[in-house]
Length: 496
Image 1: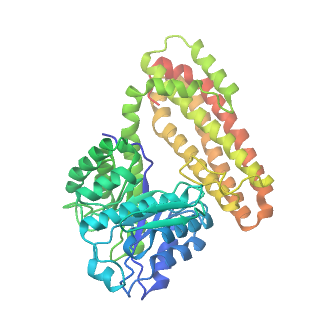
Image 2: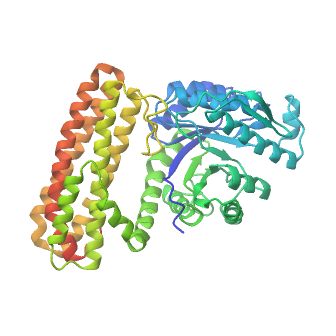
Image 3: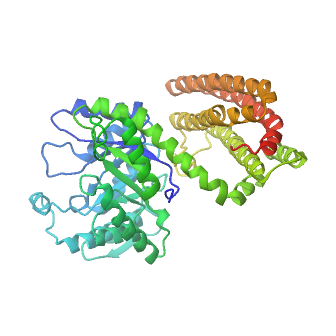
C-alpha cells in the first residue's frame, strides 16, 4: 500500500491552557509561521483550566491567514449540533474556508453530566453522534426548512444556512468497532491519537474501518486518516517517535505508506517551540519526500495510460502541449522506459501550464471583483479562493512551491542522470539549471509583491506584473526544456 492518495498534512495539537493564554496564542502563530497545515485544540468544556475551544478557534481565525482550524474533537453532548453547524459554517466563511470539524461522542460521562449534559450509555452516545452528523449536514445544504426526528436530536422546520464556502470535512475520533463503523458510514475523516491507539493497534482499526466502508458502499480512500501524535526528539529511536528527526520521518512515512495515514498532528512536549520547529522544518519535509518517492514508483508502472491521458487533455496551454507531443513523435530510437519518462515530464509541464493559467485567472477575478465566497472554490490543496487578497497570495505561494519542488527534482536527479548518460548534454543542462536559479529568484519577487499586496490592496498591480514576468520566463523555459530534453530522455531511458 502507498496510502489512499491524500495530500499529506502536518499540524499542531496545542493545549488551550487558560493560565497561559498568551503562550497559547504565540504557539498558534508559530504554527502558522512554520507553514504547518493544521491547528487543532481539544474540547473539554468541563475543564475550568482550559480555554473554551470554539472561542479560541474563532479568535485565532482572525490572527491567522492560512492554517486550517480544527476542533480535535468537539464534545457533541455539550455542543448542540444545530448550533455547532452554524458556528462551523460561520467560522469557515470568516476565515476563507479553513475549518474542518472534528467530532467526538463524549465519553467522560460524569464530567458531561456535571455541566448539564445527558448521561448516555456508550451505545446511546454513538447513536446521538450519528444523529448529530445528520443534523449538521442538513443545515449545511441549501433547501427548504428541515424536519428531522431522532432519539437524541431533532429539527422542527429549521432553516439551513449559513453555508460554508468549502466542503467542511467531518472527522471522528474513533477507536471501538461501533465508532469506526460510524466513521466509515458518515464521516470524511478519522482522527485517532497515539496516546490511545499505538501504531500497532492502527492496523486492526484500519481493517475494521475499511471493511465497514466497503459494506456501506464507500471507497475506503474517501476517508482521510489523521493521527494525533506525541514524542520526544531525545534518545536513539528505541520506541515510537523517540529519537532524532530522522527516526520520526522514517516512522511517520511508514505509517503513511502502510496504514494510509495522511495527517500528522503533533502535541508538543516540554519544549513546544523547539518541537514544533523540528517537526515543521525537518520531519515534515522528509516525510513528504519519502512518501512522494514511493508513490511515484508504482505510478510509473501502473498508471502509464493515465499519464498519457493527461498529456492529450485540452488545457489553457494546449498549443504548447500539442507541439511537444509532435516533438515526441519525431524522436527515433525511443525505448518504452524512455517514452514513459517523456510522458511524465509532459504531464508535469502540462500541470504547471494549466495552473499558471489558473493563477492568472485568479488575479484577474480578484481585480474585477467577480469572485464570491460560495463560487470561488479551489481544487488546489483544498484551498478556497475567495474574494480577498490574502487567499490569492496563499494560492500563489502554493503554486510557487510546486514549481520549486519540480525544479529541485530535476536538478538533483534527472539532470545528473542525463549528464551521466550523455556527457555532450552538459552545456544544455548547465543552461537549464541556470534558468532554474533565475526562476527561483523570480518566485521570491512574486512572494515579495504578494506580501506588499496583502498589506495594501493598491499593490495588486505590482503583484500581477510580477506574476506576468514570472509566467513569461517559466513558459519559455518549459518549451526550451522540452525541445532539448525530450529526445535524450526517450533515447537514453532516463527516469523522470
